Amino acid sequence: MNPVEMDFEKAGGLITAVVQDYQSGEVLQVSYMNPESFALTRQTGRMHYFSRTRNKLWMKGEQSGHFQEVVETLVDCDLDALVFKIRQIGGAACHTGYRSCFHRRLEAGGNLITIEKEKVFDPAQVYKA
Amino acid sequence: MNPVEMDFEKAGGLITAVVQDYQSGEVLQVSYMNPESFALTRQTGRMHYFSRTRNKLWMKGEQSGHFQEVVETLVDCDLDALVFKIRQIGGAACHTGYRSCFHRRLEAGGNLITIEKEKVFDPAQVYKA
Figure (tube, rainbow over the protein chains, first blue to last red):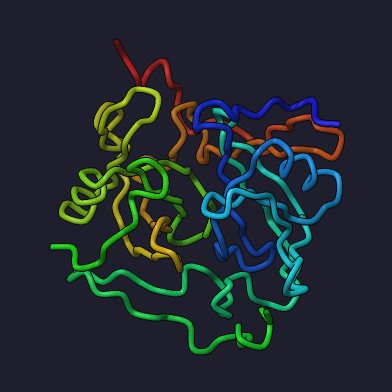
């Protein structure tokens, strides 16, 4: 299924996945993949990750329904990072409800300014217990 | 200097830096930063990284002269990844001479196809012993 051999060893079993909106080019999310989540992403066309904090495989949208459909996959020069151009179902990638996880700008003085006007969804409605 | 406290602990002392062309939005590179390279990037306005393979701090362009000048810095929701929108001096970020490290597309069957037409520079000329 995957003739390409990604280098999972360099970073303790994980590769880095940069997620970019396939139309706007906006970086929506950076997450990590173990071999299983990479294989599932390839097989299903939906983004699967490995959570470093929860130590488990997950599919984006499994709780929220906000899946990410792969449009194009780019591989870096030393085979330990990927750019996935995706279609974001529901319009927001971040668990906070913002379109992008990168919704804050770091100013010269060190302050963080939120640059997105509003949240796409209310996390309290989407992630129910 | 840096009121923002990035979370360097989650991944063994490093945070992830996604480097994006400030005009085109193309992702050029993904690298990693320890606290010192992050601080130097903030202080100088030029991208500094920490090499996981060489285990050392480096400034992009220190050998090649192909510096990266920071235009804008975005921070992710959980403070362990950054997007740097940069101006790439010399026009190419990848040590192979291509504009982007992500110059190959992973096809459905698993083959890698080079999608950039030509190299911007010849590495043999740029990285001399």
